[in-house]
Amino acid sequence: MAAPVGAGVLASCGGSSGPGQAAEGGASIWILTGAPGEAIRTAGIKAFNDANADTQLASTAFQNDAFKTKIRTAIGANQAPTLIWTWGGGGLADYVKNDQVEDLTSWFDENSDYKSKLFTSAFAAATVEDKIYAVPNETVSPIVMYYNKRVFDKVGAALPTTWEEVMALVPQFNAAGVAPFSLGGQSRWTNMMWLEFLFDRIGGPELFDAIYKGEANSWSAPEAIQALTMVQDLVKANGFINGFESITADSNADLAVLYTDKAAMMLHGAWTYGSMKSEGGDFVSGGNLAWSNFPSVQGGKGDPNNTVGNPASYYAISSKATDEQKEVAKKYCADILNSEDQNKLWVENGNVPIVNGSDSLFAGSEDEDFLKFIYDTASAAPYFGQSWDQALSPAAAEALLNNIEQLFGLTITPQQFADNMNAVLGQ
Image (cartoon, rainbow, N blue to C red; front, top):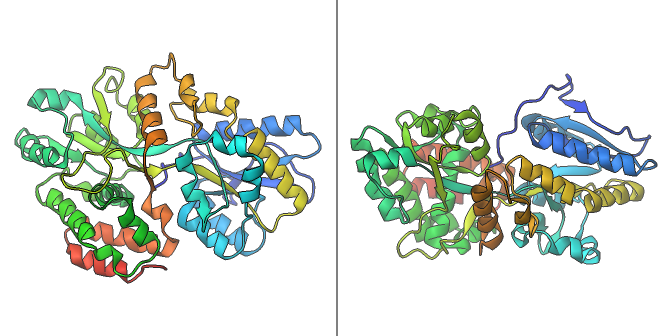
């Protein structure tokens, strides 16, 4: 569940050159395009090259989808960049299985001060069989429950804190002609966020850990069936805006449903705050947006302080790189990634760095309350579940998204969903 990446102007090969031209055999890095990340990443690479005239780091920028295709091809042909952008989880585990990325455990042991300054929750998705294979970096993006206060005030309703209260609000908003929830269902991964939280709140982290480990029939555990049933109950109660199956998240159409008062609530990533602020008129600046963690479920095993989403971004180092290239990559990670200069730029653009104490940079920001909420949620979460489409292998993730689409479309039952997903466990 990566945040949608903005379009960039790319060369016909699918990428564009960035700062720094490495000598033959020099170190290289591929970055993603889109504001504000592309400009921040580019500035960091330039700063590194300016300070290291003899060891330039060459960069190439790719759009999100183009990158996913190019990196697989490049790695398979032993032509990977030195620094490999990854979302961690299942994709990283696949690289590890094929001996394509460097084991960085000893590097982190030698740089313990660097490791300790980062959120502990950022490392789970970088770890495979107790070894660290990627450097967590940039920002954290938990999934947030958003509320339109204008609509709540109009209906005379209070913000919910439990699932039972959420379900009680559904007929109340429908009677007022307002959709209870906005949802960009055509994008599929937006639907997935609901199941991630319900699985956690009902079954606790152990439920998804069993799935991630490929334990037999884990998708059909009683807690899983309960979560699958509850989300279909919400669909059947008209909990989502009519036509949600044709609304896309990439176009921000689902955000517009919320800030134009067509819906009362929305479950979405922290990254959507900036878009609602810039596109929603006075929706954010006028104090009409509220937010919280996902509501608790009565009798559930999960800690209400748990969260899900994107714990960080990650860079792995190609195992096929030369020793000299690897040293340049490690120096870049140590000097630039998660540096104070980059942290300031992320905060200025409404993001929360994965660095302990970065909340000291929020003072004076007009977004201080929201940033502090995200920081506290991510840094204090007892468990931060990585987005399923990243945590699972690419094959299992695609099967998951297909089945989620059918689950929300009410064309398969919870048991059929579970049977279909049990069939791809461990793939």
